[in-house]
Length: 114
Image 1 (cartoon, one colour):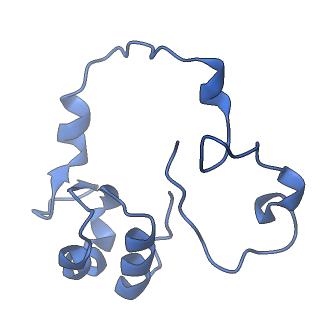
Image 2 (image 1 turned 135 degrees about the vertical axis):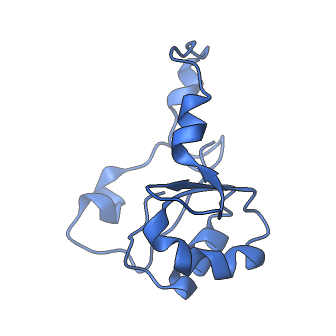
């Protein structure tokens, strides 16, 4: 999930807790607002920091450099193309989603991939 760099520590805490983030990739410029809330995020296991020399987590450049240049394709099936939050959920209807309409949603949500 993409978050604004203009959020407060409380905003980051609420959103990251709500989606049970396990990994956070953040720019060094927001780490002053993220560092104080890390202890209150029980699901957060890793922080990757881009664009700066901070000791708040793994450096983005180091993480990227440690990965292979080529990726092997993952085996997929037709079921992998389903949208929704549960295996039995019907596909999302774009006419009812605030993403596709002029109506803003009440608050951002985070849905883990199924």
